[in-house]
Length: 298
Image 1 (cartoon, one colour):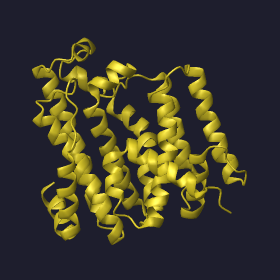
Image 2 (cartoon, rainbow, N blue to C red):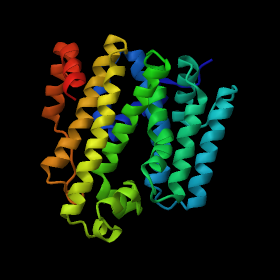
Image 3 (tube, rainbow, N blue to C red):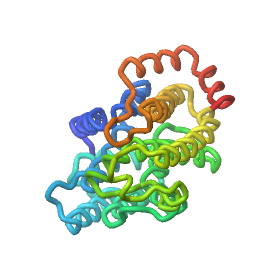
Image 4 (cartoon, rainbow, N blue to C red):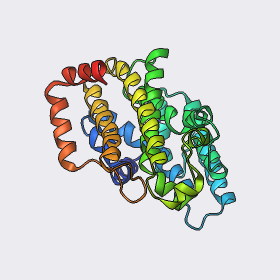
């Protein structure tokens, strides 16, 4: 039994291309069957994320109601009732076909609900609890979608890659998250450790204290990337290339933050189209050598 039409899948692809440019570019290396599942997963997470991050006129109560309806469509869809939303139709098909543990989708929805009310995180452990749903769950779902091994160690490394990409987004978007959403994803214990106040972040000026804080968080994030790399070896070869491209392009954003003088307030760290093309060419030419270099040198 399948719910999604070709038009549903195409809408998921378009959303992925519009909002997830770096990862979308990497997944062009996937076989068509896998791309379809990846687009479906992206559609599932992006629709929910938009309700939370860009709510427009939605009240918190309406945001929460939308997310609970999203959960209900998932539950009923997996029970055999066709979902009303095109992204959920595609996602339910992917969950069934790839045997994705449904609790991962629930972890993600729980994290989106948490975003409605929680604007900061006291400790890194608290932030990791949030990222278990917002990032790690996506890494696990991707493993199942790619026919990757799903043993405990491989999944742990997939979760780490999801967290690394999420942390990269947090670091790139410090100014945007604070200005547009009144959120600070950098742990409060880290701000206190480096003497960074909320007012200093709002001022949007790179002080020595803010630079030291960002250096610390960048190194923490790079360590997550390094831990994830050994798991990439275990992916099917064609999947490995795409994940490797995404990993390199995302981690390069950290280097762009450094090159921008740690200005995460007025400059958006991004990789250029030329960088994307060069990265893809390098990985396609010899992914084994590229991955070995990452594992050896980080």
